[in-house]
Amino acid sequence: MSLVARYLEAHGIPTVILGSALDIVTHCAVPRYLFTDFPLGNPCGAPGDGAMQDRIVRSAIDLFDAATAPMTVVRSAEIWPHGDGWRPRYAEVRPEDREKLLAAGEKRRADRAAKAAS
Image 1 (cartoon, helix red, strand yellow):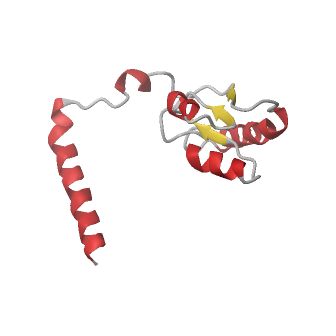
Image 2 (cartoon, rainbow, N blue to C red):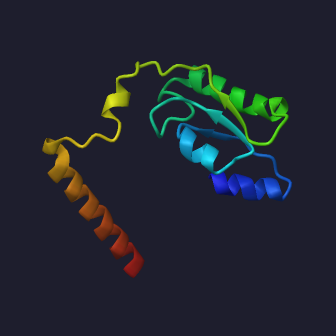
């Protein structure tokens, strides 16, 4: 999405990126970025927390007016409601999960190959 945002901006369409991958998004030099320090896949807030999601989206919209320089990064004031327990487990592959993950990967590759063949 970061590169798409840069393309759109180059063609006169302003953008704001919402995301949780600070290093990746800032490396791509997006014009406006609202960073949420949440587990990946949850840039707009915790699932089922409509009030939090609304606040985050409103903050992103406000960033259109607030950004006065290229590559403006704003850190969301929101805090992940389930604590920081996700951090040490992020991308963890436990030995007992290895076979299950391998099987899921093989199934996904087979599904993609079957779809490509049809």
